[in-house]
Each structure stands twice: as structure tokens, then as C-alpha cells.
Amino acid sequence: MGAVVRVLLDTHALLWAGLEPWKLPKAAAEVLEEVDIEVLVSAASAWEIATKVRIGKLPGAERFAAEFPDRLAILGFLQLAVTVEHGQRAGLLPGKHKDPFDRMLIAQAQAENIPIVSNEKIFDEYHLLRIW
Image 1 (cartoon, rainbow, N blue to C red):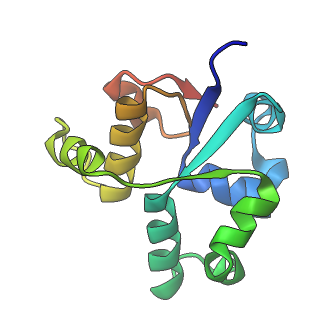
Image 2 (image 1 turned 90 degrees about the vertical axis):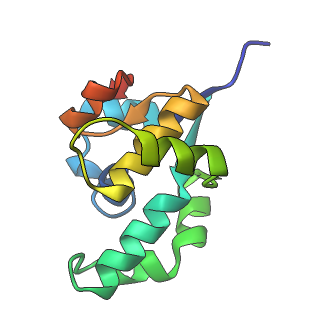
């Protein structure tokens, strides 16, 4: 049996998958529907969604934020915890990109050596395999 194929979902891709799946491009949707791929969601995405809901920047995502673990389970996605290594990598990442949530996702994708499902072209600067 081969190695398990895993991907990390960016926060906006997660929200689209959970709330507006028709917005996902074909390549991203196909990866999320593939039964042999483990789709990981970072604890940083839970933090980002909850924070943005709290400050009013994600109208319509209140229930998703409140039911986050249950929503992941329904979608069949797995949780990816933030480790000390992830935090260290995120803090030490070069470049001017300042978004702490994106920096954590980049660091996690690098540390876990997995592709990321995202429309964020800036991720390409960090030599990640980006699916979109």
C-alpha cells in the first residue's frame, strides 16, 4: 500500500468548501472529493475564522465558526494542530508577507511537506505545491 496523500486547506478554500462549494475551481474541488486524499485543516484556520467572525469581517460564517469541529467532521476533513516547529518556522519565514495566518499555513505545509489548496499566489514564493 502506498503512502497516504495529504493536502492542507487554506482558510478561504475551507470556507468555500463548507459554505459555497460552487466557488471552488475544478482542480481544488476534485482534490477535496478524492477518497484517497486526507484533507487537513489547520488550527490556525479555526483561529482565523473565529477572529474574523468576532470582529465582523466574515458575515455569514458565524455558525461555521461556532460549530467548527463538527463542520470539519461532516466535510470529512482532519485537524492539523499547530506545533512548536510550525510556530518557529512561521516566525522565521523570510519575506514581507505579514499575515500571521498565512505564515502559519505556509510553515505547516513546508514542515509537513504537503501541498496547499489555495488561491494565494504569494504562497508560490515559498516553494510550495499549490493546488487551485
